[in-house]
Length: 208
Image (cartoon, rainbow, N blue to C red; front, side):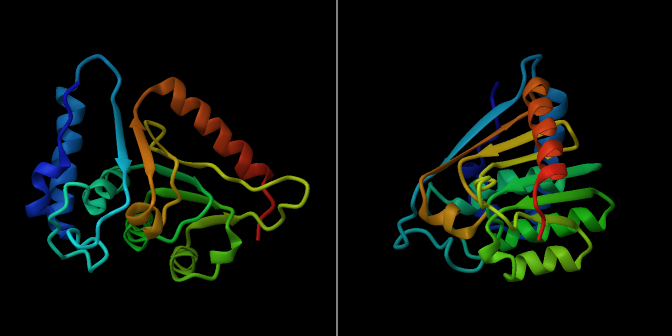
């Protein structure tokens, strides 16, 4: 299947909220009606950025000149969150990416049921986690790792139809400084497995 190349629209995107919303909506409509009978798979790799060329460490309205732009790549996660209509289940070790947190809150405000599981309690008092909790989103943070280990998953299920699975935590550090990868798919057999895993963790994790 041919997929839209986000790099080709990097100059007009520049992470302007209106542009992001328009492009993401167009992309999801295109993906829904034009895709073949095969399931959708999109793999994206993040590489450490060269600050001399990329402005991704600056405010999001900066225009990026790097083909490895993390802003454009992060937009793929943003698209899924923006197009959620029913539910978003997020299970990540750490969540402190401001732009992603903003989209999660926006989804909650438009009536999407959002549940979040995190494990890195070092950051539970961070700005993004506070904003998520203050907005009324259900959030569980693992508070006891003794003898049971860390909840170290990094995945998200959207509307029980889309899976985002990644090596990275949802942090700015991961998107600009690490070697990471994300997979987005609508393969129902995978989504079912991850949905079941989320429900199990949600019911059994110790909560702060």
